[in-house]
Picture 1 (cartoon, rainbow, N blue to C red):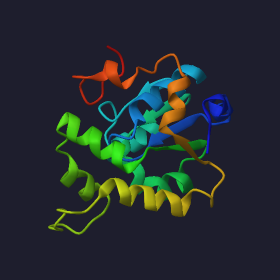
Picture 2: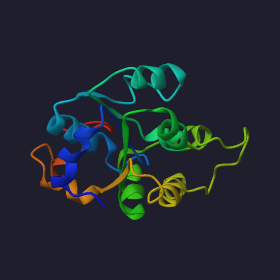
Picture 3: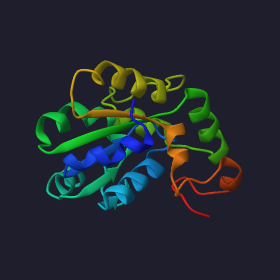
Picture 4: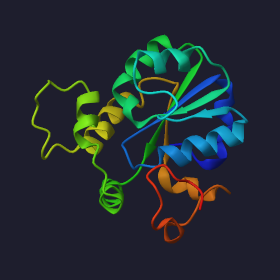
Length: 176
């Protein structure tokens, strides 16, 4: 597991993907990593989880791309990304689900579809956050360019805002 003070070690990569379950803290983690490394930051709104977004990411240097929808693409990116580090934000499932509830997150079906599920799959009752963590747990210790950062260690950064200050924020908001 990475610690906040380990983030500068990611500078050995020219591209860094920050991914994980929706509502796990990928947005703030990506912004923190980009600030510490002085890299350009792009999120899921800038580059979508599609071939054009992946191509943009893989052809840019000194960049951090935050996209929770890219967990399913980790094996492809790891094999084809060249100078690429992949950071997975680990947050307790109960906290992820509470955050989904707090903001009224409605992207469950889309996230299941992006994880290469069969079209028409009944996603009700499927815990996509848990599945992403299970996949990551399988991969994490098998490849040297995969890093896990606990959500709570991000609180050591100057960009961090306490939970009490985040009431009423938008889903991708990181500053008040």
